Every structure is written in C-alpha cells, then in structure tokens.
Image 1 (cartoon, chains in turn purple, brown):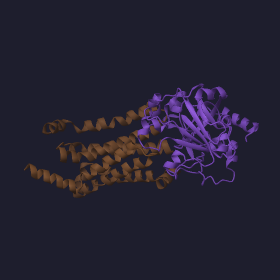
Image 2: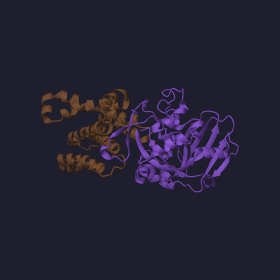
Image 3: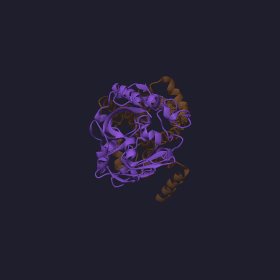
Amino acid sequence: GVGLAGMAQGAAAQETLEPNTWEEITSYNNFYEFGTGKDDPAKYAGALTTEPWSVKIDGLVDNPGDYDFKDIMSEMTVEERIYRFRCVEAWSMVIPWNGFELADLLNMAGVQEGAKFVAFETALIPDEMPGVRYPILEWPYREGLRLDEAMHPLTIMATGIYDRPIPNQNGAPLRLVVPWKYGFKSIKSIVRITVTDVEPPTSWNMSNPREYGFYSNVNPNVNHPRWSQASEREIGGGLFAKRIPTLMFNGYEKEVAGLYEGMDLSQYY
Amino acid sequence: MQQMNQILRRIPVWAVYLIGALPAPWLFYQGLTGGLGVNPIEALEHRYGELALQLLIGVLALSPLRRFLGLNLLKFRRALGVLTFTYVTLHLLVWLVLDVQVPSQIWADIVKRPYITVGMAAFALMLPLAVTSNNLSVRKLGPRWRSLQRLVFPAAILGGLHYVILAKGFQVEPLVYLSAIVVLLMLRMPISGVLTRTRQADST
C-alpha cells in the first residue's frame, strides 16, 4: 500500500495545482446518457432524479444490499482532493473534488477472500436520459477496476466539487474518480458496485477494444489509434491555449507505478 | 415554382457571399470572448467543419433541386462552392495553428490517423476546384472544366467519411451528413436520369 510518505508527496503535488473554475468544470462534460455534445449534460442532466438514491453493492462482499446514499454519507469521511483530470480526448482540467476513499466503502461492505475486481454501473433511466435513445454505447454504462486499483488511497468516490454537492452533469450524487486513468474510467452516477473475481466488461472496451483497453492509464507513450496522447490542452486557456506535455499516469507515477510493475503497458493499455 | 425562380433571380450573388462569409469572423470573435464555451479551439474547429459540410450539401443539392423540383439556384453554385472551400480552409487552419501546434506532429497525424488522411485528401481534391472557380479558367479549360469540377463528388464522400470516423461511439449526426451526401450523389446517377426522362416524356 501507500504509506504516509506517498500521501505526503500527493499532498505536495496538490499544492502546485490551480483548479479550474466551477463554470469550466460544470459546463464542459462527457456524459453520453444526456447527449454527445459537450454542453448536453449541463443542458439536460437537470432532469435526473438523484433523491432518493441507492447503490446496490453485491458480489463477493460480506454485507451485500441496497445502500441508501444518505446512509453511506453518514458513514464516510469526506475530504477535499485536488486532482488533475485527463480526458482520453486530450484535454485536461484540475478539479477540487470532495469525496471519500473507495476503499472505505468497500471495507464497509466487507470484501471477501478471492475478490480480484470491482465493477461499476451507471443509472439507466430512459425517461430522464435523452441520450440513451441512441445506441452510442451499450447501456447501462459500465466500468471496472482491479481490486488493488480500487483500494488505492488516491481512488475516491466524489460527492462534491468546490464544497458544493456534485452537479448532475458531473455525476451526481456519487461518482468514481481515478486520477491516473483517462476520464471515462471515472464512471458517473453509480447505482451498482459488484466485487468479483473476473475482469468485468467495460463500456468503451466493449464498443471498441482496439481503442480503449481495460486499464486506460494515462500514458503519453501509448497513443490512441486516432490521435496522439503525448500532449493535452488545458481547459481555460482560451483560443490560443498552448498544449502541454501529458505526464505518465497523469502525474501520479510515484503513487501508482508500483501497481503495474512487470506489466507491458503498451499491451495492457 | 416559376414565380419562386423569378424572386430568386433578383437576389444578387454578392449577398450570398456576404451572408455566407459572416459566420467566419463572428465565430472567431465568439471564440475569443467566451461565446463558444471553455474549449473554444475545439468548438471553432468543429463549427467551421460543420459549416463546410452544410454548404457542401447545399452545393450538391442544387442540381437535384432543379431537376426534380424545377427550383433554379444554379446562379449561386459558384458562391456556395467558394464558401465551402473557405470554411474547409478555416477548419484546416484552426487544426494546424490552434489545435495541433506542433509542426512535426502534423505530418505524423496526416499519415497515421485515417480520419485526418481522409480529410486532407478531401481538401487536396477541392484545391483545383477552388483555383479554377473563375471565368478565365472556365474559358481556358473549356469542356475539361466541367470534368474537373466533378472532383467535388469524391471530395464530398471523403468529407462526410472524415466526420463519421472521427466520432467516438456510434453517433447519429455524422451519419446523417454522410447519408445526405450519398443520397444527393445517387440522385445524379443514370437511374435518376431515366426517371427524369420518363417524367419529361409523360408531360409532353
């Protein structure tokens, strides 16, 4: 695991990050359940009913069941995490999330012996999600992590931004945030978490395995087949924004490189 | 339709040029001042590209409109063609100068990324059309000018394809554009010529 030293480095790295504005973070989103335009989620996600909300936790856990969002929140310690956010489309932001470590939630459910992966599912509510009328992806949206990735202290469930409840377009009421992976891994508006012993299917990988791997770690040396991942554009720089180099594991190499020791990252992309 | 054609005949071509050109500086200004959202480079690139496709569909619609509906807009064909090329060029310039920025990466992208290869091929096919869209060229090239202008057909297919293969996931809008282009081209094929002749025969 990551000890105090690792966390201190993480904290030090945070100090230099200048967060994007609320407006930037909440007006430019990918949430295809509400449409494929970047402004569609801000326009249409207001229709999503997020209260009441419950999350089914099942699979290889001691305490499976439907957990009410409010009950989860009463058990968890929410803290601020200022993370880089790197989209697979080669743009990036810095977001001041509020949330709790996924490990705490999984420990509450009690992960059983033999568990190796964690699968996640986004809500699928056709009446409130105009985008799911189209077969852009196979709905519901699905994502997954290896158990050690899920238990890593950098991996959080975000419930807020700038100390305000997370807006629907950003994945209300709770979403995953895995800062060293491309943004699409950080699945939004989660209704189900399944602990399992097999690698779960994930939406973008199902749709196009050549372009989107299960791991999808930010990696400037492994290009997307249709564009380079070597650099990125920071949101907020205006019409003449310069591209900046993309960092290995999105700048979290010290903290997470150990998870992938001995793996060929161009094969497990 | 006759009346409609008479009204259309009174619209000066320069008005079409003017109205068609206005979105270019307007969108750039919007990009500068925040009107295109928080990623104005991407937005401007996409808006210019979409306008180019829309104008291109307009150009391709002119012949079928006349043939099947008797609506005569051929007077504006050159204006729409030149405007199409203008927006394709602006789209390309935003990509080169504002988006990719790194000159060494531009060539790599053109060679390695199919949607860019296809887009660049469409631009290359449109270049000779743009260069010869003047009266002097029409006179000098004679009948060859007409054959040369047919390059717009493959260019249009490649332009529509460019949009379809850059989209993530299975998206509807790019397919609508490509279908429109394919249908408009099919309306020019011999079978439609047969239909027209049949219709003309009927009416005599």
